[in-house]
Length: 278
Image 1 (tube, rainbow, N blue to C red):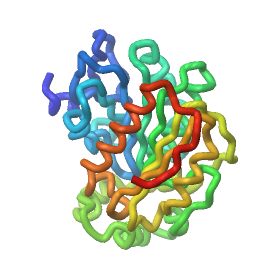
Image 2 (cartoon, helix red, strand yellow):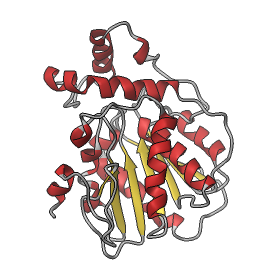
Image 3 (cartoon, helix red, strand yellow):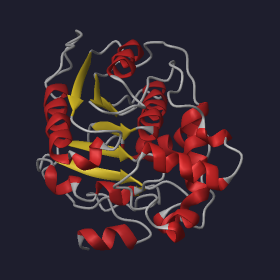
Image 4 (spheres, rainbow, N blue to C red):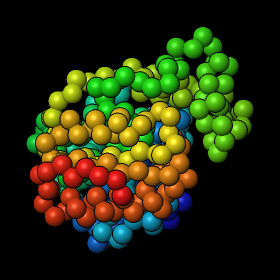
């Protein structure tokens, strides 16, 4: 199976040959992998957003992209509009793989909130991740920045507000037909992200690495610093040039930071707060 085949097939197989869930896509098998990185997309995005990550990360990292309902090969399924609801269904998939390789999670924007909720469920089950990387997202105990778009009165107002937030570089919003097709997923994603809240508690034991964009109006440095209250395993904050979608526009920088965080977490978690900007 080629990397491209993986994005269109109904499921892929783990390195051990076991059939994976519709929730995951493995674009490139890594026989020498020492850690498995589960990547969760932002609102309106899909697993294909992480297509290039498999070759951009070292061979000791196996990328597993999470495929959410309501888009790509799961377009016919209803999108989920609750972060906890997504995590409830995703966590068992990761738990089924927990004995194969150490696990780490990456999530951008909405994906960061889902990654956190999933990490909590893994921790409760005694299979906590090695690392959580949160990107472009407030900590779950903070209020939403930029208003609540999911409460706008009609679809046209919602799409207009999205274009103002992301005026260029968004393939979905630049094509009206595609925007209309993915509108249910977009609305569900923003509903999930904007209604999610969890009290500040250090329920995780793994390190948390937080990334923010220098020009991102939706997630400021202080929003990413607040993730430190969610773990006892250490917390670092790093800046990346760009706006809210810096994960796309400055992918090489993001992959470098993710690689460094994975390397640090593999050296038996450092139990201190290593705040600072790189």
